[in-house]
Amino acid sequence: MTPMRVLVTGVSGYVGGRLVPELLVCGHTVRCVVRDPRKLDAAPWHPEVEIVRADVGGDLREAMDRVDVAVFLIHSIGEGTNWIARERAIAENFRRAAEQAGVRRIVYLGGLGDDDADLSAHLRSRHDVGRALASGPIETVELRAAVVIGSGSASFEMLRYLTEVLPVMVTPKWVHTRCQPISIGDVLRYLVAAIEYPEPLSGVLEIGGPDVVSYAEMMAIYAREAGLTRRRLIPVPVLTPRLSSLWIGLVTPVPASLARPLVDSLVNTVVVRDHRAERLFPFERVPLAQAIHRAIGRTAVGDIPTKFDDASSPVWQANPTDPSWTGGTELTDVRDVIVTAELHQAWQAVCRVGGDRGWYSGELLWKARGLLDRIAGGPGLRRGRRDPDHLAIGEPVDFWRVEDLETDRRLVLHAEMRLPGEAWLEWTTEPDGSGTRLRQTARFRPRGLLGRVYWYAVAPFHCLVFPGLIRGIAHDATHRHDAPPC
Image (tube, rainbow, N blue to C red; front, side, top):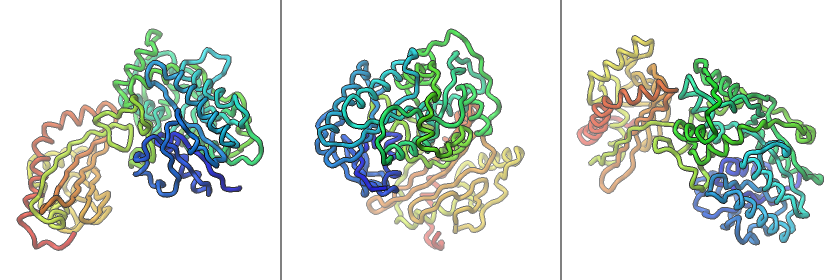
């Protein structure tokens, strides 16, 4: 395979941000076109790519110069009332720029759906964009996919939230519409294959995973893979797409303005009817249960390279309770203090929490929580800690375990107590003038409705124990200097 120069648009978005490292691994030169290059500063592959600052709807001469294959991953869904016209105008501008630069092939990721069906506005626009890109002399490959399953994708986050939060759901009829979901890993494999294909290639390639299911069946599979109880669905004929999108916007991190066109699309049956892609690229596709299992696992550890709300758009707004790395809910209690001690002294104090020394404040509450945990079959506080001054990754600290430790920077404890969700306690230290800024973050990722009820039920107790905990660490840092290094 001869290395090529590949132009990728939408690199700050969900698919584009994952496609770039795949192409780099394959030995290609990757050029990224982005309106604000600063958005790529945090990407681990940032130093390995060419970056051109440009608007895809504007002048693309520099971006297209000496490009072999141009990948179109732009999506304006929900951006104002004229987003459909904007999508087509951007596609036509992209095609003209590619023609003038002599680009050999355009690869585009669109939406699966039968052209003869009464398509939703979302799917109809996806197909219109494909036709606009293919209306010139350049080879154009339009990959059409349905629901993409992967950590951080909008479709996965809708599925995850609706299934986890609501054990009983009143649902519209569209939950029984058939679709053919595909894992994000398989989407990337198809994209790379279409880019690298050595022979002439053009036209529509329908892509999907090996399973054809309804949305209700997807929820059942998610519940099983996540270890949830069986979800009960009560279908009703009066729940319109608008009402459904408003409900999704309330329950999930996907805003209603984005949920509406997605819900409209769920009315359409979206399954692969033309199997040319499977014949051209006969790799083994990931089953739906396995794709969901992988996405759950990555979400649980925060291993999410890109997420659905990465791209610049007025609809990509994460909830204030969401962590920065995902579209998933994470409830937090964050507290900061300036410690009048040098960095390492503050760090040593952080490493001394728990065990015989206790938790500095609200000891009766901590002991009561430990007793309840023991009654529920958890470890309680009886394990203590191995050493009063030293910690290492993997060691227990009462009903916590050290998950991450970076000396003089960060300590993360993961809860092993019985909880309707997952919890962490995290401290970070950094120099601040002649002292140290100490930040304490309690994080809770609830499991279903019970998890949310639990967090808000114990929130008053957090107001009693967490301020005292960080004050106790700060006091220890300024009054004890004889402990060995952590």
